Image 1: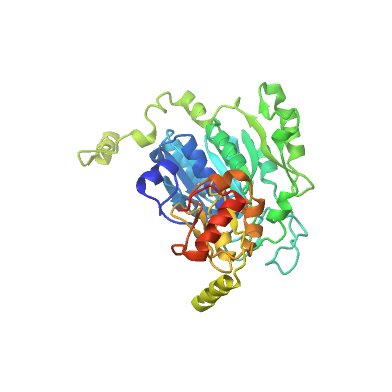
Image 2: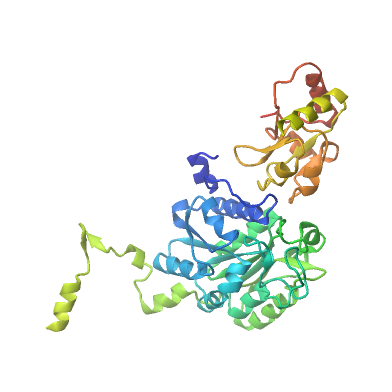
Amino acid sequence: MLSLMQALKTFRGLKNPDWCPGCGDYGILSALTMALSELKLDPSKVAIIGGIGCSGKTPHYVFANGVHTLHGRAIPYAMGIRLANPELTVVVTGGDGDLLGIGVGHFVSLGRRNIDLTILVFNNQVYGLTKGQASPTLPRNVKTKALPKPNLQEAIDPVRLALASGYTFVARGFAYDVPHLKELIKKAILHKGSAVIDILQPCPTYNDVYTKEYYASRIVKLETLGNWDPVVKKPEEVEEKIMNAWEKSTFPGDKIYIGVFYQNELVPTYEERLLSRIPSYLKFPPAKIPVSIDGRPVFSVSHIVSQRLM
Amino acid sequence: MCFVYNTVIILAHAEKKEYQKVVVDQDICISCGACVAVCPVQALELDENAKARLIWDVCIDDFACVKVCPVNCIWPTSQAPPEPKAKSKWYRFNAPLEGELKSAYEAWKQKYNVTGAPA
């Protein structure tokens, strides 16, 4: 059990996690808390939004503001929180079933809006909390432990879906490579615009195909390739960089690349787009407008009604 | 359970075998508890920072923890790199060491060049 001062400094929550022993979520939690504390953020200015699933429990274990929301609806909550108070650093922690199953519509919509959020997809190819059914990222003809027969459906690739939806920062990480993942999360938080990190994580309880050993022999870091540059510097380069990222994002394969696939800061964020319409938005965001003074509401309904009637 | 545990420790000590034990690097540890769950004699625990810690006098060289650690931060002492051996507080004792056990500890420290202090 941590003291309050330690928790303030390290971002580690006062509760101990109750995930299975050896779960990849522990690696992601370590990387997230280390990234937040290395960026020297104020815990009161950070919000962690979790959906439903093992991944959705993350807000309980981080010493910051947090919401444990409805299944698949973590992104809409985060969008609302970020737009109401643009001072906050908002991180969404959701699983593959949560963000790419029931919440896939919101996942695509966020790419179109480019709100300054960080999305962490905990990708373990199964619904771990409900006894290991096939999730949307499990490839066809693969049979994990809890499935009676091989999977009939094709998989969604989170990296490719994010590229197609218009996310401006797309990366892939590995839950057991904590120092590398920490750097990715730091880059994603500092990025201006919607950032998504697809985090490959073994599920030691229900996924006996994509295990620690499977990943250990296949993972290659993009930084180790010569002349890999994911950053878009001119608008003409967008097509070329997306095609390069598409080529490298194959999963599963003999080589699984991790690192930053694509980064483009030339697209204006939603906050900047709003600013062109509401010039005082950043100065007086909805969270800073008082709703009551001395216990009395600022807006009087009867006043408005009487004005309309006159 | 307690009976089995005590018997194992008593048998282990009665054999007078030299154990090489394991080394834990708490800076790499992600607090997942896989080693704690798999150890047959409960020689590993999560400390106050929720990192894995070895209980030195209980360890009997099973090495299940080495295989199961997802981030590979546990090694048999003979194969461990030098940095974690120099760190402190990654192991503790179940009871104050006395007699033969104390000399065994000193010999182990000397043999494997462990400089870190116990918690």
